Image (cartoon, rainbow, N blue to C red; front, side):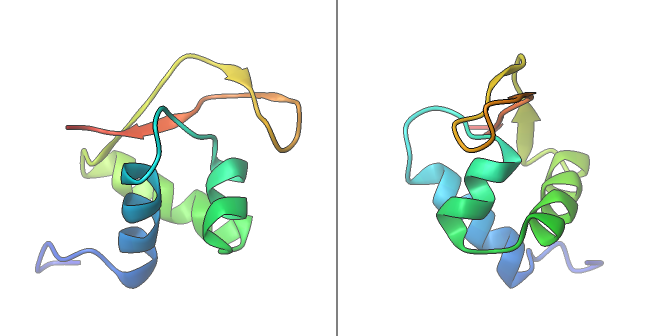
Length: 75
């Protein structure tokens, strides 16, 4: 972490988000990457904290149907 290099899971999240049009909820990211939701939630928090991701306004999740803040990569 001190080196500023992203972990493998962080890279997987970033790559998956870059490869799509629009934003995605944490559940959608978990489904798309095949990484468990517990790991995705932590990696997304880390990426938000270092300014790699931004949260958008709440919308319905395509996986759960519940409202959630989707994430997108900061260009």
